[in-house]
Length: 419
Image 1 (spheres, rainbow, N blue to C red):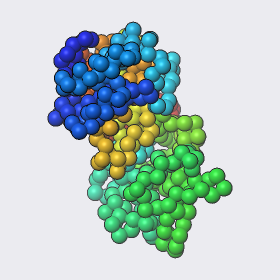
Image 2 (cartoon, rainbow, N blue to C red; image 1 turned 60 degrees about the vertical axis):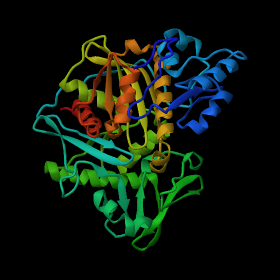
Image 3 (cartoon, rainbow, N blue to C red; image 1 turned 60 degrees about the horizontal axis):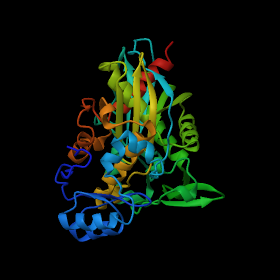
Image 4 (spheres, rainbow, N blue to C red; image 1 turned 30 degrees about the horizontal axis):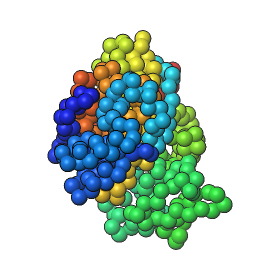
């Protein structure tokens, strides 16, 4: 539980995270997690969960400057929200006063495909006789498609089969195109585990890999298009008919250029009618279609996927949801960083939640529901942190976290593309 203002009770972040410390400095929130580095706190500011000696040192330091509140008290007090406008973590995407009407349940006549085009995995939902279902995306019945594309043969391969051959064909494989699409070369964060090269050619970002006939260069749009072509083919095989309409989800923090590039990839893949939908909105639709939430409820949706984080706060009003705050980090963590920086990941997650709460000018007690979205929400560490931050809210994670975005996108597709 989070201690009340002024309490000396320690903050415990489960599981086995009692040695995780947070402090606030002049520029950002930072975290440390081992005894040998705790002395750094004395040089930066106030900390949570320090031992008695460090507390005394921090108190002396605070005599020289204004005392700062702990993280939880800063973000959960409305007065602090108003007084702390100078504190803005480096998080992208803030929007408010956008309203979405909840789509109705699908009918047998409605059509449209919902596609969660994920950083690490994709998921697809379609309308089968008035019921929205997740479809298998390979011959083994897997419903989650790894976002991997291989060019070692003339016929492009996608998904699980590519991952299985990665050890021998890594230099012919492209993945993480979502981290690159729509970005300039200087904005692309190169990962150590990429065996393909990222090069700049006349201001265009190209991915260089080895195809079946030698070196080949692709744009991230072309790579994403190959993935979407495969998805389209699988969806049409499952439905037994041609499908041309799709709602594709994107992170809330995607820039205009990233959205344009994603739509271009869809059109190149053969989808004739395409609409983009923010991932947290799609997830909220999936939750509310089956189990509506009462009017005037304020909901925080936490969506942590393979490479992005979205925190969306909205109010339910008259069968619609009004976005109060929509905040995200499109590069929350890479696969290599995740293994090395689990504690820093918690830090970055807290930054995004803090910013969302500040933008919404809300306290923790005003959050009625917290929706858990994204495969990472299965982690006890993440579940525990959210429940500790919002102990009085109803936490909902009954919808499969890996499939909820695709389901919501399909509901929306059947609404916007209905006959």
